[in-house]
Length: 462
Image (cartoon, rainbow, N blue to C red; front, side, top):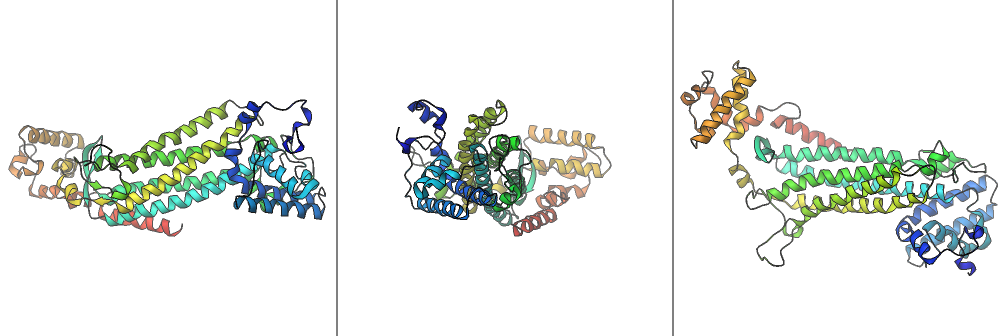
């Protein structure tokens, strides 16, 4: 085997690794995406080795310039990877040797791929999640736009896919806003969990040279170094947290996508998707399908799968490092990319969504006001359970006699309870129904204004 094709670790071995094993072991196609993090980590490590007296100043500068050159060449698509490059870390080390010669062989002093990989991936995950967080913030702007635009629309609120009570449409959109606000804040916590530096942990027992790990941590933008070298190389809870966070975002979006899919049907016709965010049928010319929303719903399955996939891998691994941990990168990269495009597509759907207010208003069933009538009787002194029973009988009467719930006059209502008076008519007004629920967090107009201000204040801080 030529020197160029020798493995960095093959001194122990008497014969080359089987070709199939090389293919099985190789992760370069996945992990080359964080070459920048690998090179930044190596530059910081070179400085640490110089400070510890392992490298001379000239050697340190040569290594750093060589690493910077490699990154520039990669960005210009001028790097040729070889079959012997089993991962991005080994590839960079090989190429550095070609760039600067023997000094490159000193860079790995005191460092293992175990702590190098863990450091690179923590940096990559942290940087990726910061980008995702920005896209969540952009999505929140789109949700806020819908809430402000639709605040004067009264719609049926649904439970069990049955009309339940009237709500402001802004109240519906704001429920999505505050849910995604929490998702944004969960990303903040996940980033914090990523923000400790394993470099200097070595393979398991720590570095054998006097490396200033706090200074190294500061140079790489971490809040602190890991407290324990075994934990430093073995822990992947930050990956599991990230995959859970990303899956949770997908699940949240999927639920609202489901509502909009239903609302876009001919039977509902509450909303219509813009043509740019819909597709047609290859057979039926009349079709306009909400495929953007269906894909949002569908891709959530792969996000859950990625979490489950790595959780299953991780649960069987002892301490400290095992090759199984190589399987942490692909699910994260897939999940973060999936969530980012999903958020962007959904934001565009919301920005261009047509609201059919006339159909929404037309669909309001007076039975939506049944709870308001029960509350009216409670305010007249009737215990709620009895009031519930009275109104239930009223509903049954209307259904049996095909009467609208708001068509009964006061004399007819008195047959169900003598507590009904002329002021009961106020219960059958949609705006009054909303005003009666003007508690904090409710669907009343003052509450909606308060929620909008809270949302606006949150967006202003992003």
